[in-house]
Image (cartoon, rainbow, N blue to C red; front, side, top):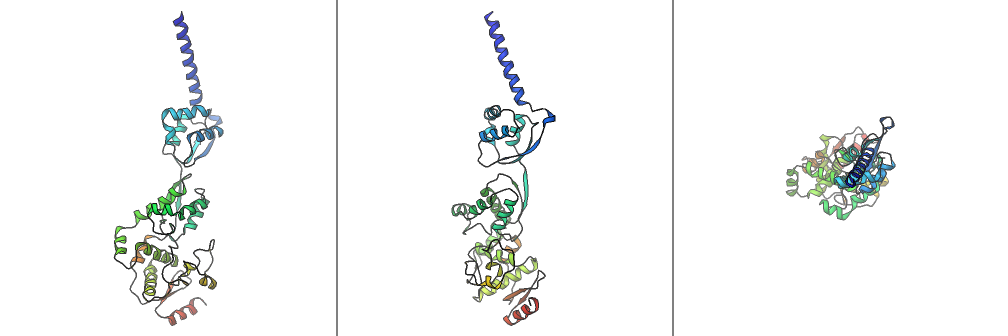
Length: 327
């Protein structure tokens, strides 16, 4: 008799546990389903995620979901990012999604010549990163050393390309992605050529960043490169307009005469040689032009106001071009 009672009691407990499991494992009725985006932040704990899933009505029981994750070992497999979930999903389905490869990715294209300030603003507008946190990471000396960038910022090494980024990614992980793309895209022979030239590779990147800001025409890049190198050979100031306003943010207007007299470590109207850091993030064509300037006698160029430039070998010819195109 005692054994029968014990058996009946055990069956009742198992049945109750099984019923409880079914209740929490199964999803709500289909007619109550709703879809929503759910984001997991970098470094967020599984307990925090469980509580938020319950609060947003995605799972029925926070304790059940939490211990399901712990018992299956998936609690340590969270992936930061944004997920498309719905209230019809079972706890197990939700758990598989947020610990799998179903994170929603956002397409971001970094154009050639964008500065780190413009990239930070673009990423914040897309809801992917805090602009200030991104820029703070761009200037972090410890992080720069880790990335092996011999500069005061990551400017110049955020490679212009199309990326797919998960919401919730940290600023540093995004920066690292851009920098790794830079080293993946730059051919080894570019580095080898820089070693045999008068400039270090970092100085080449600075030069390329100026070329990128001066022209969008591929055919002009090596000509502008030749002007800069010719001026360096003659110990002339580079006098590149974009360098005069690099540190003025936000600024999207024309370079004015007053800008040229600003004393900054970037303004090549006031300093001799290259700016202290790159002034934009150049593409491969600009880097190639910095490594391969055309052989010319040009020392000046002026905008024709149609996207192209007029190049001159003498100051007199340059003045005539200014009178023709800018007045």
